Image (cartoon, rainbow, N blue to C red):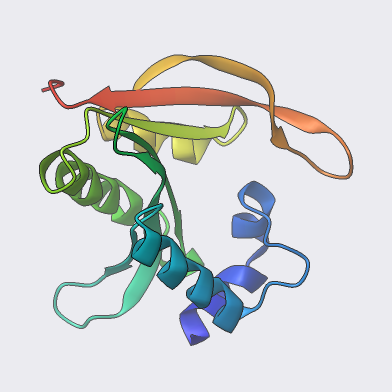
Amino acid sequence: MDVVGKALADPEIGRWAPPSADEDAPSWLARREQRWATGWGPSFAVTDAVTGEVFGHIALKHVDPQLRSAEIGYWTLPDARGLGVARHGLGAVTRWAFGALDLHRVELRHSVVNEASCAVARAGGYALEGVMRGYLPGPETGFLDAHLHARIASDA
């Protein structure tokens, strides 16, 4: 829970994925468990393979068995940024989604000004498909444009 508390307090994570006003670590974890149990969104910690230290989080959401599609999102803690953590986590969960869940398409969306997330998407083989105008809630009452990236199961 300490890791989740750090993530919820991190201004960089909050800049791109603001928590709900009433969100704390226990409610965040409970929501992830509920999403997993209902099939709506498996959620994973990204950890060091040797020490088990948690570096980040990656999750599928909006899993649609009929369309065989989902959206993927991630964050990394400050000390893990720039180390390839998001890229490796993205690759692992994408492979799992295409294999274990038999998905056909996984989408990744991020603010057009989030260059780090764009680099992770490209490195993970997610093609940039376009710009979604006014898609993401922004500061105050505004909305931000988002890049839409996607991979399909047949992508190399």
